[in-house]
Length: 239
Image (tube, rainbow, N blue to C red; front, side, top):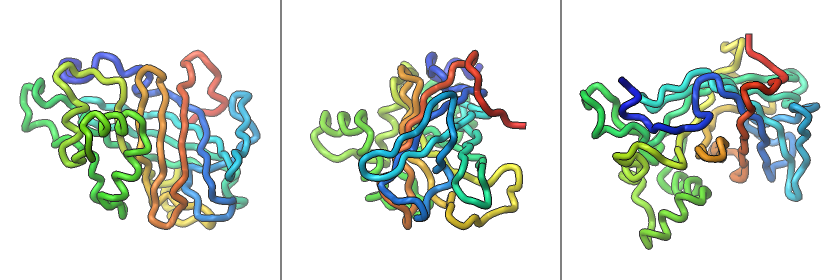
């Protein structure tokens, strides 16, 4: 079965898990912010506070489907008060897990798609952009320091899918695909979801850390999400 070639322990990285947190930016309100930006009246009693350099926005994520064997996940990202026209916005996003499947333990390797590498190769992300964003994550900086030189992002993903099939950190990219429920809406004044997220999942902390990239957006947009216990009130639901 699939359980033979995926990590034994992935914490809350599973279908149905919910996360809450913040996204901070040095960009003032009114600039081209990603759809995942919002201010909210409250989130399970938590209120986002502006940081010294800009604004902090509240974010909620619900993972709808997680398929570790196929290096894939998808879910919903809900925000509030982003624009006057849309007091609440939800987007559907898809994620590619990097170097996750351990190919050496798959019975029929040809049946499993090629592993995703750290090189994005789309969404206006150059190799230089990839390096700038991946190096924001401490485990990758530590790996670079251990090697004593820059990482080879074309092959680095192999290091994070060792034969033991277990890791403390799982890297991925999230791409918002369309608005929910009206997927036909493609343009919203004051919001954009043309970019994507560089994301790291911390298995032990059961938390996401991410950075948004779009070639016309502010470069300092930091996403932080913590897992909400299954028994805890979610304060929202998807119908």
